[in-house]
Image (tube, rainbow, N blue to C red; front, side, top):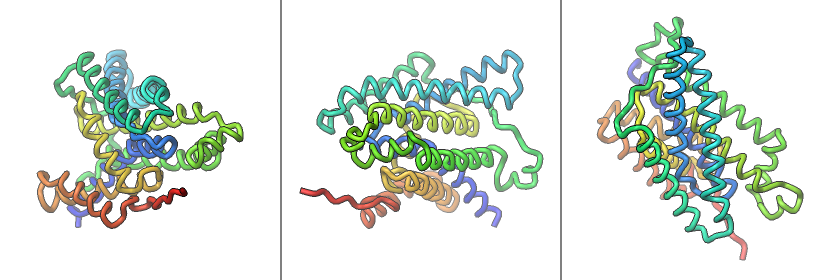
Amino acid sequence: MDYFLELFFGGLTKGSIYALIALGYTMVYGIIELINFAHGEIYMIGAFTALIVAGVLSFLGFNTVSILILATLIAVVYSSAYGYTVEKIAYKPLRNAPRLSPLISAIGMSIFLQNYVLLAQTSDFLPFPNLIPEFEFMEPYYHIMGSSELVIILTTAVVMVLLTLLIKFTRIGKAMRATAQNKKMAMLVGVNVDRVISMTFVIGSALAAIGGVLIASYVGQINFYIGFIAGIKAFTAAVLGGIGSIPGAVLGALVLGWTESFATGYVSSDYEDVFAFCLLVLILIFRPAGILGRATTQKV
């Protein structure tokens, strides 16, 4: 039973990280129907930013909790600025172009950011300090779940609640829903669509940065390529749950995390990705729009 719980909470931790990144994919797709393939690199940049900030603050004598908070805040701001800039440079000029053009631009931006960090930093894996403090009350449960897993799960839950409240009850949230439903009608009633799209990229990038800091601290190392792997997994989670659906992105991420965890625990770690993508294929065969996605009809 303990082994089952260990795998369960391990999968929940993985799914929580995938959810933070998948939300960026699904929010952008819901607004402008674009797959932002550079989103994984924003996650990677957030992790590198936190590593640099943590090194400086540690040298200055800050304690672990202060380093975690400040490093996360700075990583969020820096990554949000990157997300905003990427939208303005790579996507806005192609807003009315054929759909293939912004997709190619997204892939190009992903490759550019990878190589930019590669040249600015290193191709080697860099050690990342464990910034998440250990809680004494968790000691009896370390064989099932550690403090890092608890912080990651709780952080993701809080972020989900705050994002839901933002979208349902704030002015920018209502503007996002209106833009996602019909951009032209939203513009006619006074919604600044360009501002809404930029804000969507900023929020998605901020969530990716939080995920980058937490998972880097949990795993203990980073390199320039982590964004590609995490991005593919998060994109898979978004499609699995229903691309464009925020609850679907979270559900898809959790299902993906549990699938990988139990496949690793009961079969072999070599088949982790095999089971994950087989599940995706099965879902798309029997539920093409994803678990919570809705089939769309086009009027002619």
